[in-house]
Image (cartoon, rainbow, N blue to C red; front, side, top):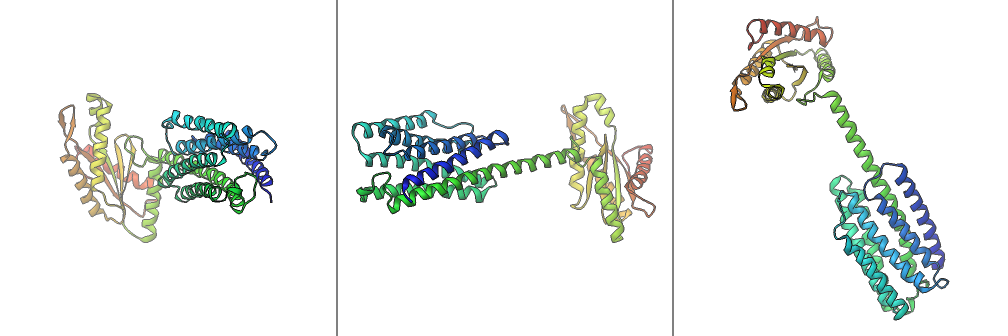
Amino acid sequence: MDLRTLFIITVLVNIIIAFIMAIYWRTQKTYAGFGYWTLANVAMTITFSLFALKGIAPEFITVVIANTSAVAGAVCRYAGVRFFWGAESLPHVRFHQSVVFVCALFLAYFTCIDDNVMYRQVAVSSIISGYFLATARQMLKGASQGYPYEAWTVSLLNIVYATLMMGRVLEWYFHPESRHLLIASSMSTLYFSSILLLEVANALLFLMLNSQRLAKNLLKVQSELEKLATSDMLTGLYNRRKLEEVCTAALTHARVHNRPSALLLIDLDHLKQMNDTFGHPAGDALLNTVVKTIRAQLRDQDILGRLGGDEFVVVLPATPEDVAKTFADQIRQAVQSQPFLWEDQEMAMSISVGVAALSDADCNWQDWLKRADTNLYQAKKGGRNQIV
């Protein structure tokens, strides 16, 4: 296959890639930098379109504009990767713009005034290889963000790309007869065939990276929504909806394995008085302090949730009633001894606890909770800060 035909094939492939990426860009959720990557493919399409016109169109078009477009494409790809991985700006923007502009002037001089193909080749290959290596380095940031295989692969492709470019410079240096763009030497054929494959691989992997990042973020959002639906906003504990689910599961597990279990219904004493005197921020701070204190007393298998207001539920799996009462009193004493400061005032905290061991008469968790609520009522009626 002659190189002009290979250029035409490369142009057609890049047109398809650029078209697909443009559609994806406009119709799908994409991240910062995707547009720059698309522009890089457009630039490569222009470059190889003009390469294919070598010997037909003026040298200014097939050399100066074509190679300047290739350099601009390399800059766009580098910028795209930086933005894709979270950079807010491209540092030294004027420098990158100057690189493209100076490269264009350099090419124009050594094409139209002092025709020197070797100078042109060294300059263009060095600049593009530098940007490919910089792109490879930037792409490795993706490895630390949870995309190791894709990031390393794209990084490796860019290193190969840069190596091939410099290899072609060496071929032109040692074999002057191969310096014409359309001479199909073994190195030229390998170089341009590899570029075609690398362009396809780069585009597919970048699309894959965007899709995987989107899927990962959607899972994160879904997880956050699920957490919001099952967690109490103030304390982060299970809310009533989630409590029903986990308590039902605990009840079923206890019945299946014939193990005792207990439920503690905890009420924070005098929360309303705290809210009325110092405001709701003080009450919220008090609630979180109590939650932190209770958590410090729990075992890994224990379940803690907020039933609502100032009431909390603790499920103690594999715990008989007498142990549960001891455990409840341990929590009560810990809360009572925990200092609470608000506006430089130290205030006392206390809780009342209703304890209910799982009974054969409990048909569901509401029955279990109802018995604990009855005992809690007795604890509050008896003067609070006690266990029933």
